[in-house]
Image (cartoon, rainbow over the protein chains, first blue to last red):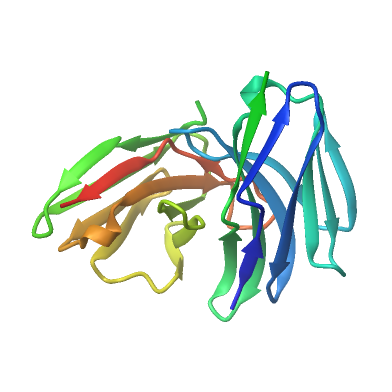
Length: 112
Length: 114
């Protein structure tokens, strides 16, 4: 089956840097996405990696290593508003066609 | 605001009721999705419609019935649900069904089945 693993919780202080890891076991891998979800809100798209390497978008960066089935989301200069859940998601092809599988999510708490 | 709206935002229903969830997107997209988000479980993709055609049905029980009358509207018809179906149901849309297209999510409908 398809599975993704993320740490369940991460805590950091304002201004710090935090890395949220995601490992996956899937077949037919296309790419890895990251989503942010605040309590009571809908997921919002952060980044997408199809190729190995680092993608940088402002304070957020995302990394992918296809050979290691591993990726991470790096958040720099943390702000209180970054407290949220972060989901990695794999887009892939399986017997049903194209599919999209989310990880369990990592709850990030940013402390003052 | 992501351009995707869902109604109702909250719904409480009994196991014998029939209700429908509605999703509308104002982004000119051609693909729409239903997801289920349960507490302490990963987000689950339920259905995908691409150009009004259903392309994915991830082993969802028949008590959930989707309908996509046009590219802007998506419904999820519910009947004889179980308490374990209580969850947040999210609708999303993207330009087309593609792994590189960003999906935009609605606010969700919080469903409670008694």
